[in-house]
Amino acid sequence: MSSTPTLIFDCDGVLVDSEAIAEATLIELLGEWLPDLETETVLRQALGMTTANILRHLEAQSSHRLPTDATRRVDTTIEGRLAEELQAMPGVAAAISAIALPKAVVSNSRRQRVVASLASTGLDTLLGEAPIFTADEVEHPKPDPALYRLAANRLGVAVDACLVIEDSVAGVTAAHAAGMTVVGFTGASHIEAGQAARLEAAGAWRVIEHMQQLAALVHDWQSAVPRIPSRRHET
Image (cartoon, rainbow, N blue to C red; front, side):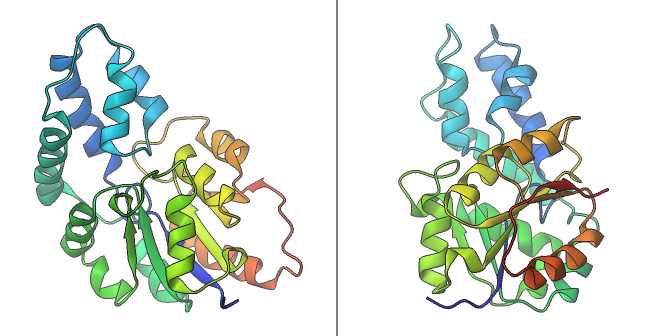
């Protein structure tokens, strides 16, 4: 395995500001399908999971049952809205351009959503040939570390040479369990107060609020010998 430092981005809530759109869509649909739940409250506990796992998690708390095609309907509706409304995360294009490391994308979304999101925001051009790894490639997606381990194996990079940017507890948990260093990101529009502490508790090495902070943090990470797993919230 190579020890070449490699930067890995989650997609939703890190590269693109999509989670607020996805969350609003889920609240609307689940309000119809599972009316006995306070959907907005319970949904927060499942953010960062795949659509199918979110739906299973919420259905288990309800006396109602979801439509058999609920996952497909949710994904199709979300992707329709993303095609019209999605924006790249502020500052992320400049960060990608400024950081001269090999890059990859590891997402719990299905591949077609990730590809479409990067294309519609123009980030696909900046990321170039950066490999994309998605939840449909593993049996157990985030928060399980399998997807990050798969990415490291296919990239041919040691896990301790990977720096991951994640916005969710599920994502941080997965990357940390895989043996990677994780930067928590709290700059997306869906982030609630207290998320930095939750990401740190899940294993984030640092937490940043703005993408313009990333390049300096990558430099610090590369310079740390040995890399010390201390935690600090960067503001």
